[in-house]
Image 1 (cartoon, rainbow, N blue to C red):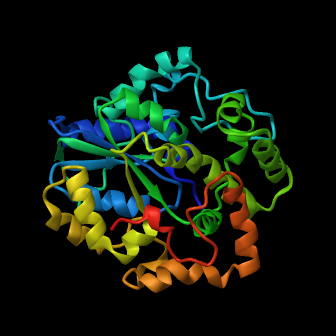
Image 2 (cartoon, rainbow, N blue to C red):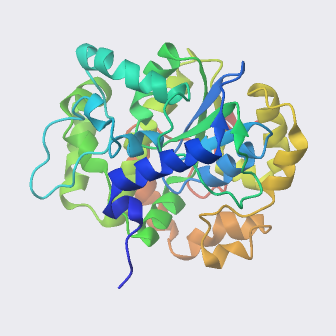
Length: 339
């Protein structure tokens, strides 16, 4: 029988042990440059990008920091994430929204994480080419707090980066991992539904959660997680946000890294260019040998999905106004591509 990772079996013990080891063997002293919040979906290519950014001297990355926070010794400082789940649902892990009082309560612990003062779920991958024991900047992977992107952006000194990947291959990759959809957390969170969904959108989401296929549910999950970040970007009110797509990073890694180097003030480009050619530590075995084949990486999912299925699945994000991935196209629409 496959054993679950230690973090899943004994999360508090594992996170505390990581913190102790990090304090003994590593040192982080925050420098003058801002940290980075990378908003992304699960299985969206973020680990590859995080590995690459962490190759810059003085930079480390922290994976799923706000998810790990919920299992840490500081979990009590996080306000309730929504109504108590029913017996059929898993414990809530999504930060779908807080009222003003709970935001005030959440602000101190969020600030301590984003500023690097609290070392929650630090990477201890000492053998990785990108790993450094002494650092001055942190890049955080944010997968379960995307709905708070505008609040984070307004409250804290951190760069905001949004990484997008086509929802269908993302969903298929999540399915392969055996992970459950988290769409129900948004649908049953009254504040999220009231703030971000029309009655027709909420009705559609409820129908998919109740009776949709597992693939439809994962596409809905992607949609609800990306909804607030994409709307924020398209509003034109956040010109300093950095938005990139996984597909363009696969096709044009040098161009993307040159852009990120300038936008995020990562001046030493060469270490990142060297690292970007290496597979992510989370890459699957079947992909590891073909990471230099962009066509394979971007098109392999179409072997599993017919054009009719693609059109039906993409009608889900389109119903919520997310139309950046046209049916039949390998990459996102032009407005999401860097020149």
